[in-house]
Each structure stands twice: as C-alpha cells, then as structure tokens.
Image (tube, rainbow, N blue to C red; front, side, top):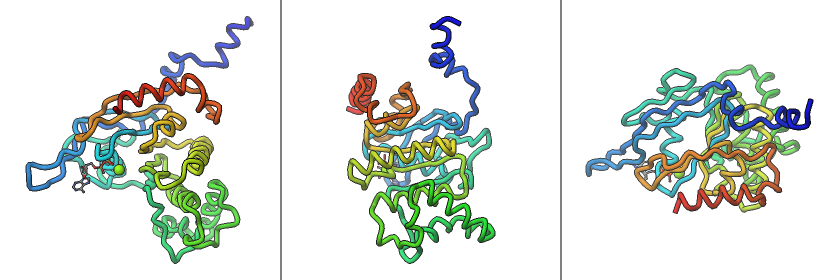
Length: 271
Ligand code: ADP
Ligand code: MG
C-alpha cells in the first residue's frame, strides 16, 4: 500500500463523510412561530427548515430575540408552532418525548434536594425501581465529574457544578437528543471552556444528538459539527455552516488558522 492510500484510509475526505449513511434525527420543515400580542402578532421565527443527523452536534447562534429559545421549545415539544412541522425520526413531534432531554440556562435545581436526589427526579416521575434509578443516577454523577458531591445541596455548589447536575438530570433517562439553551451563559469564561470540554466528552461517550443555543462564536465552533445562524427577528436561517475541524477537539484547535477563518466568517454573518 502506498503512503498516499494509507493516508486516505485514515483521513476520510469530505465527500466520504457526506456520503456516510446516517439517520435524520430531527427534521424541521417551514417552521414559523407567531406570538399573539393584540397587534397582528409578534413573528418570532419565520419559515425555518433544516435537518439534524443522528449524533450530530449542532450549535445555534443569533442575536438576542431572534427566536433561538422559541425554536428549542418547539423541538422539545413544549410549544406548538403556528405553521410548519417537526419530525422526530420521521414521526411528527406533537408533545414532549422522553427521548428528548432539555437543559436551560439556569440549572433550576430543587434547593431542598441533594445532587443525587435532583438527578433522580425524572426517574422517580417515571417510577423506575429505586435500586435501578440509583445505579443510573450514580453513573451520571461520575460521568459529569461530581463524584463525592452526590449528597451536597444546591446552595453548596458553584455555578458550573449546578449546571453539571442539570446536564446529568437531563441525561439520566438516556434521551437520544439533548437540547441545551445557553447552558453556560452564567459561567465565567474559563469554567465555560471546561464545561464545553465536559459536554464533548459526554457526547462522545453517550453518542447523543445535541442541539445547543449559544451566544459565543468560539464556543459554537469549538463544539459543533455545524453552526446554524439566525437573522434578527423574525428569526430566519441565515447560514448553515459545516465545521470540518478534527476531533477530538483540544485547546490547540482554538488557535488554529482554520478556527480563526470560521470565527471571522460567523462574525461577518452575525454583523
Ligand atoms: P432568543 O432566544 O433568540 O433571544 P426568544 O425565542 O426568546 O429569542 O424570543 C423571540 C421573540 O419572541 C422575542 O421578541 C420575545 O420577546 C418573543 N417571545 C418569546 N416567547 C414569547 C411568549 N411566550 N409570548 C410572547 N412573546 C414571546
Ligand atoms: Mg433565548
């Protein structure tokens, strides 16, 4: 085998990656949401179409008020769109589903419950037998790096730790899709970078499909396979940018010329 062909085998070309057989996890077709406001309605998002492959990591970027949270609420089955459809593995999405987990900007933990009890909550609601529930919750405690803190109360946690609990709680019933709405918005820059690495590690370990809203261009590039950019309100899809940076991602990638080019491109689009 020549040097060249062995190189080709280890580094798939872009064409090879695109033709790899993948399932569409989420298919969004001509989605619009208008909120009633007594004045003809407030158009939050307008005619958005895209699809997300299984196990893809997609970030959504856009100005404040461009309908990013509205989109996520529709994808979570929490909000019925004014028009258009969302399909989850080919089935119309009409209501929240167990296969779709959600993490908000604020951890929203129950203050009187310990870390473990907070993570256990979705399993209690599903009436999973307690020994099985505990085993799964402890696995998640390990996965998000909170070993030793399972009996702590939320008031004793840092912001980053509280968000880890929220991520563990969203993952404990093993959803296929994880939706995150600016989950690291309240954290300082360094903690935020560490949480991003943590999320990538979890995504790689559990092979989830992730859709995450963020305000941060570098965060979107660092984490994603693709970045969707919204226009100002009413939010329309302005750009669907593939991120062909190698994985696993590392700090070095943040300083690579390709990263800089992508950041410049996104900055120009967001204006
Ligand atoms: P983003 O997350 O991009 O900042 P949102 O999706 O939260 O934007 O909001 C988009 C627009 O829709 C904003 O103008 C917001 O005020 C409006 N909006 C969001 N939710 C509601 C609601 N439940 N009722 C009325 N207007 C809403
Ligand atoms: Mg929002």
